[in-house]
Image 1 (tube, rainbow, N blue to C red):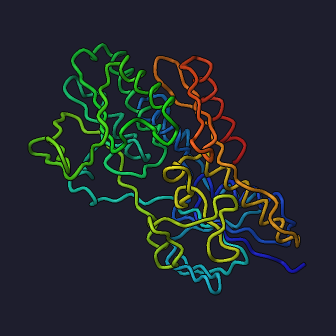
Image 2 (image 1 turned 120 degrees about the vertical axis):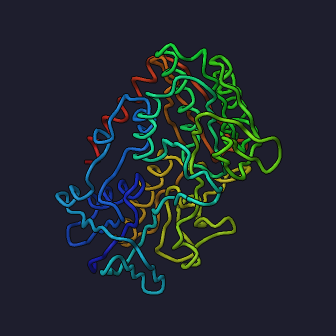
Image 3 (image 1 turned 180 degrees about the horizontal axis):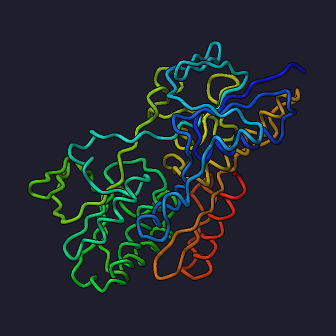
Length: 381
């Protein structure tokens, strides 16, 4: 059995899990390479807690280069080209050739898709979450508009979690009576991909917290002088504090490889995650996994599950057998609902219709979310 090289592009949740699993499962003569533009990994599900002052960014950040001690070749640099004919990847001033290639490049945030939106506050990356924390300390009253400008969006439940934590934060400071919180999203109902029961439970939760919901809203531009978000259809949205998710775009390299599907994201077999190029896989946010009525939501839990499947199937091929694992579309995640409570959303997203269940809120599920954070970072680093 000839030595093989597996190259994983992207050090987010999917890439990290895939590279780590492969290193544990493959013999030492085989090489596992992980490439990312940044040497740091941040546990994204906890960014809402950074915003709310319950975590610091260093606490949920780890150095990917520490994985070298486990036998993973971690390289940092901007990936500039992927040659599928030779499976050669160029990054920085270096290049590597793969026998198997896993694309886990996530989504790229657009700064200009919605003019003016780049000035909005956001908790969808580390710097933004820290900045929001400081801004919330000085905000004493007015209208908070939480806007999701476009779909798809990474971890859409975090958008609603953020609104609920804003409510809890300002109630704790006894300022909530003077603050109006409203969420706007292109979705007609919250998390429609999870089914009507989950949507209705979230709407009920928002209503009990006096957080207004407006669906079917598509942002066109932001007028900072007048503090208005202009819609493609409908009256402008006024705000004193604008909190928004970034517009998510496919990694620019996908189009150059020809692996992009009709929606611009990587087209994959939904069970094996293999692309149209043999031996090349795509997982996580960059992969468009079809489900009833659309695509699988972008979420760390799905990236993790896909990574487990791809790693095991690559090991099987290295050992001379065919794929033996299939991704089943199951997902479960926790959502902090404020006031020391949390919810648990679990379901089969390959079912038609999707079968998902919303459990809680309860103190148990918030403690479970804390436990996931602690054990996940400990387990993979």
